[in-house]
Image 1 (spheres, rainbow, N blue to C red):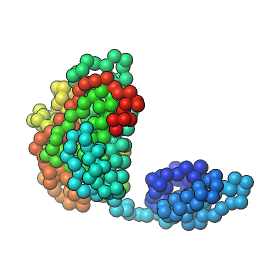
Image 2 (image 1 turned 60 degrees about the vertical axis):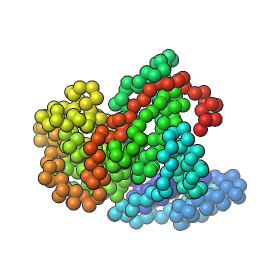
Image 3 (image 1 turned 135 degrees about the vertical axis):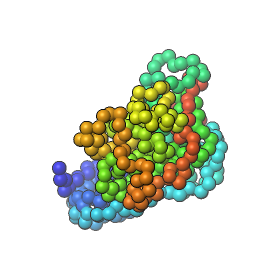
Length: 370
């Protein structure tokens, strides 16, 4: 399907983030963007014009004299950008190392206003993501919660949530902020989320990973072999030790390629024989979320291996690791953090544990303790 024009209704409700996203969409796809807005008054009208100008969406803007003073923006088709733009992210100074209970207050005290604004946005987003995930999880929503001190038994789902929350973190500092926000969200539901104190030593999602941005995927698609491109992508978004990624089998990827199971640290030897990780003992695998941009690469690798009629317990990333890995990483032309930070220990989200400690906090109390 070839889309040439996108129309946005009620554009006067656009946020700065959404306006920037529309500008990037127009820039990278070459579509004609049409915005319809009905600002009520001069001040909202001027605010909308300023917003569009800041997002570089004001070209071709004109006002139609209608009873409701509607604004219509007919943007001329942009020239399609062939190369993905550079990746940008906010750089934080040294963050406080305090536990979750005092972390947010220390952010406010120690950071400059702009840094605090960015950090608190990451914190709040993680807190809300944790609250939403727990609300939808069966163990959290049942009427009679477990007794205090009962461990959270669904470790695979916990690993999936934590890796999905952090695999696109641009820096370990972003990861720390998100983890502290998630811990606050868990506490509001009567759960204590425990993670390693030294994330850098552990490695894993958000620590030894690289976000799957448009630029990164553009580099990956230049790798000619489907299995090789998917193998390098998995190194990038899991941050796992290369030996663990190399042991992944065709059955390691779930339906829809939303998650991948790798042998847990300490179980590499058991999988060197070609055993399917899904058939191992409990705790013998670690779950990682697959970023949406990386899923087509894994789909292509699966299809390629299926066309080769490879059994389900065969290695997925054939001819990727071993002596070929150095040449492939040079062809990728992107740094792979886990190769320079091998962290001979389980990934941090594999070490994460959770316990029921109290009843969920009421909504009002939760707001007061934030």
